[in-house]
Length: 344
Ligand SMILES: Cc1cc2nc3c(=O)[nH]c(=O)nc-3n(C[C@H](O)[C@H](O)[C@H](O)COP(=O)(O)OP(=O)(O)OC[C@H]3O[C@@H](n4cnc5c(N)ncnc54)[C@H](O)[C@@H]3O)c2cc1C
Image 1 (cartoon, rainbow, N blue to C red):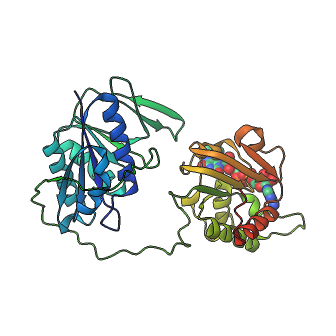
Image 2: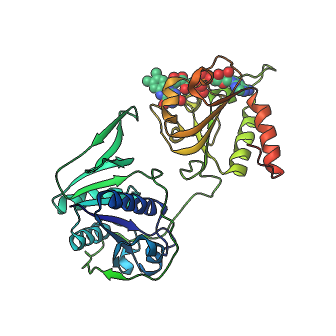
Image 3: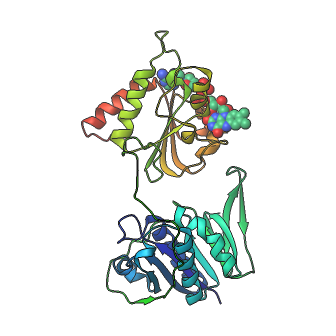
């Protein structure tokens, strides 16, 4: 009989579980129900009491490692906390969010427990057994993994489960004592770019992709890179969308051609770029070629604006294609957003 432990940690507020942790809770609950397995949830926080109230309706046994030293992400203390939670709960299956905080300690913790680990899990299946799915070769091949070794650690990719959202209530928490190793790292503070400077937004509802067409000569024979930059940043500002790019557009800076200054290779979507998860995607001035579209695998509703009625998007790669001038369309969309009329 399996027993499940979900490892969680708090977000920057310190008093609520991170979204990825709540997704892992959903996965744990579903798996426990399907396998008729016991469910425990372990929390790592300076003070777990406030965060734990959101788990009142899970019906799970709650354990927590608390203390000021656990408020910051740090390998030594996070690994010690997770190890202590695992030793206390003695699970056969450990689910954890693939957050930067847990992704770096999970393999070490699994090793300390004599367990095995798989990362980038996107789904948990199987009827009587546990099967973890993950993608290989740039999201082209999906593998379904099962293992007999226990404990089996499964790091869950963010955005693959709905975050658990039960009514908060009083809870009973079992404190798990940890003698933390003397920290060699201290966190001096956080420096984050302003909201507008940060264009890659994994939690955004929509992915907006800019293609090389934005910096190509337009019908008047001229390049309008400045106007393109304003249209794109205005749209990102009004919609909160995440910004992606085709490879051609980010590459052409190296060729001395006009580029959009806020784009880097980090924005690139595709076979040699990122494969983000968003509910909707809008591609603009981009041809929709296969190596680019590979990165759209996890975009549910795909739309594109291209002048070319024969582009890859119109050949079955998008759900809706607007054969139109993206400069005009986005100017109108921005106008409507400015007026507060969400028209799409
Ligand atoms: C091994 C390999 C890996 C690759 N990996 C990637 C990858 O990870 N990601 C990636 O993106 N590419 C990748 N590529 C490159 C990919 O094949 C394409 O060359 C690239 O995606 C094309 O970019 P684009 O559509 O922006 O540019 P273009 O092909 O130049 O298309 C520009 C489009 O903009 C349209 N357009 C111009 N003006 C307007 C306007 N005013 N309104 C509307 N539309 C307009 C044009 O009609 C045209 O369709 C890879 C290629 C190889 C060989």
